Image 1 (cartoon, rainbow, N blue to C red):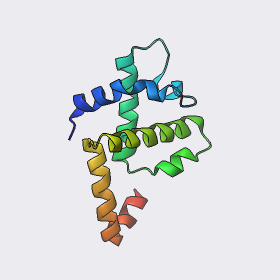
Image 2: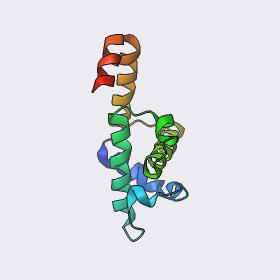
Image 3: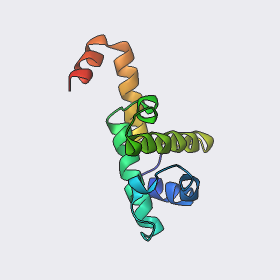
Length: 114
């Protein structure tokens, strides 16, 4: 289980993998930004996807370039976590939400209304 610093360093070590994602600058900003700053910006968005329980497929198929890019980043991040058998707190939250929603229909209904 990674804390925030471990999570950011994990992503920092793999940031080059994200450079080939189309329109990545929409997520992490100017190329002149430091690698650590780019990592922090990307991490903030990745955690938002997990914490809000957004579906990767919907993001990837969105017409908006920035949303599609975020979906591709999240997909890659999840692949990296799985390859390293790693977990971060926001992913644990996301998995817990999925389990609760699957077993409690009223919970699934209430999350869609919010």
